[in-house]
Length: 344
Ligand code: UD1
Image 1 (tube, rainbow, N blue to C red):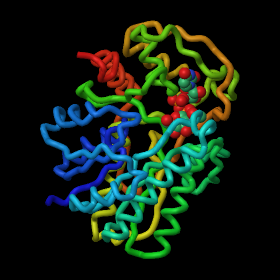
Image 2: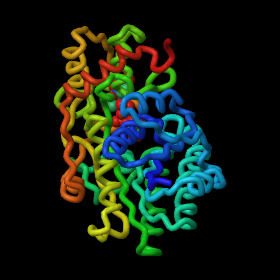
Image 3: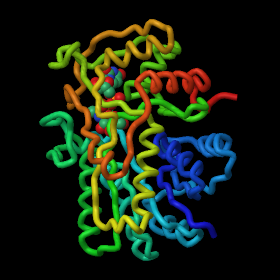
């Protein structure tokens, strides 16, 4: 058996890009995913892009025996946990499902890791832990005030990791709080593939550009920002994937002697308004993207962007791509796969 990293939720948008980065570094990977919000064809895309085969498990990670089976059948040396529900809106309507699913997956992974003596985990957290930022750029030490159950599951997960780290110094955890991922794989064969009408900005814009949706609805035009639309920190999904690999490598490098828990922001450190993103997409696609202003979305902050100094210092990580790169890659993916994986 080869020593491998278990990537829970490895078929999702960020997970799949991280798997590719690991494989490109000759790090063996096992994917575990229930494919509830992803597609089994992602695995084929990963294999075609990297020229490597990947072992994957279609499993419900809320079932502890299933998690144990993966560890029994493989030599796992570290875990990256992307698995969980991630819709803000749904989490407010079905909080129990969110708390149960997101926390149970993490608890199962940690319990089985403890049984098996595996002590390194990178956790996918979110900028949503900060809620409406009190000051900018957002720092890791800022107050955590999530405005919805999804965000609460991330705060609670970090709490669990902190407490566990205190109980036994063999544990080492890095929680990555990421801002807004954008872009797709250079090949155009892997990208964000939401089910139904997209909630997030970028997939919505590209579906307008390609003619599947008629116009973008911009949520609010009177925010206290330069052009009145809300500002976010967008980063290329490839940069985000690099950040996850850097974090895992950091934990596995024994000379770092790292034990405990650390939370790091991953973002570009810059803010762009909805209109700026729209204009960037217009330039890249050469198409006019119609829009109308509608009511603000409940809970949306006016402005959020990260301080990324801590991640730079800790991991030696830095984002490489520009907004234009992000839009180009998103558009390339959208054009090559207008219906996600549902085409011949
Ligand atoms: C959202 C979630 C966040 C989650 C992240 C990744 C909310 C409140 N926050 O972040 O917790 O971690 O997605 O999944 O849902 N916008 C429009 N029109 C649209 C879509 C978006 O104007 O059709 C605007 C939004 O107001 C926002 C920006 O575009 O200012 C980005 O929105 P989105 O992509 O949904 O990300 P966030 O809301 O930042």
